[in-house]
Image (tube, rainbow, N blue to C red; front, side, top):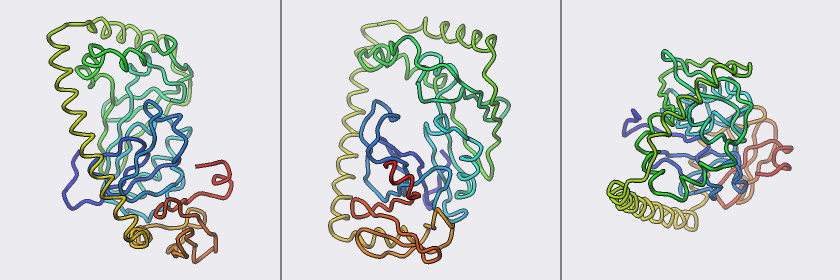
Length: 293
């Protein structure tokens, strides 16, 4: 990712594994982990806002860079979501499972086959759910040799798209053709034939993988501890910094006003929004708040 040291970075849908470079995190749900990788709990180790991806509560071009990793494929209306992403940031990075990966794993809550074709981020309607009764989900979670295979061919499993100024997006709302899906299945099977146990590469990969996990865990733990100190020492300062770029998600006016430790208020329409965990403004409509976050 082409992020400058001075860039202010937003991450939308940060979930359980926020990018180390993100300055501000944004997620729709704090407690519902049903669509997160492995259903892991959300990680909050820096400034966080609860918001809806179709109504991002930020000023126009408030951010130099925005990260959207494994979010777009979940969206019912990707064009509307991308319009909001481009509105709040000058440039960014989008990562999604490839169409081939969708055929192998087949997540029930993904709505699109994704690919990049001639520089265009292409989305095709997906109707199939989980494939093979979750066999490959279990395989990657329980066997080191399949994880090694997945990481070796990660470039085939993920679509990575970096943009500057605008996103060249094409959305085909028609169901992908039978012929197109069959061709995709043949490509997936050809790739899967490369997956096989091999003791020495597997043992080497396991050592490297465990070292990498330990390093990441130590960094995450330290960052979380430092964040908890900030929350307990000066939560109002954290909210104050956020309010400089936030705006009301209902009337789009700015600024929001910090009322007390449990609320922020829109100075234009008068709506109140709860603040949870001392520092997290929940900028959703009353209906969405009732539905849960």
